[in-house]
Length: 159
Image (cartoon, rainbow, N blue to C red):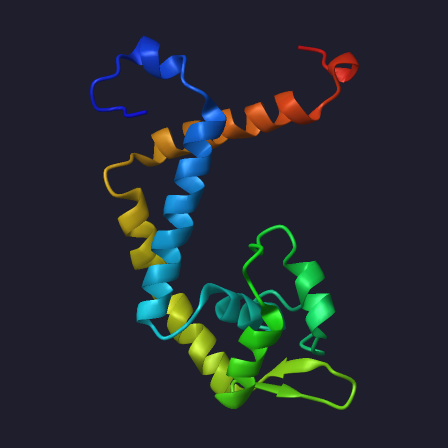
């Protein structure tokens, strides 16, 4: 399927799941490639974010790999190996591991997290190039409605 010659009516008839799947794969590949250019994998960045009390960790107390996997379950991909990714960060001195198997971010890890995060606006800008914020918001609202339409039992729908 292409959109180059499709009319609005033809586009309206195309399956949303096909296009959202293509968009997901393209966006993930693009983001991961940009982060790789910075010397990081996306899962490594997520590990640092989830362990930083300056980001996603509420208390900085550290977490085990299973706890981290649970915290990231909505966005981890099947190929993401958190144990291997954590090992790389341990070797680089960006994480430490205590006797209870809890990973903690180091000062070096916090610096690395901040450096990668500093590039997020330019990655977002490239992804959003040529897309008006209002159009983006509309697209998200449409996707949210499709999610509601497909996750709510028919008997519970009021509209």
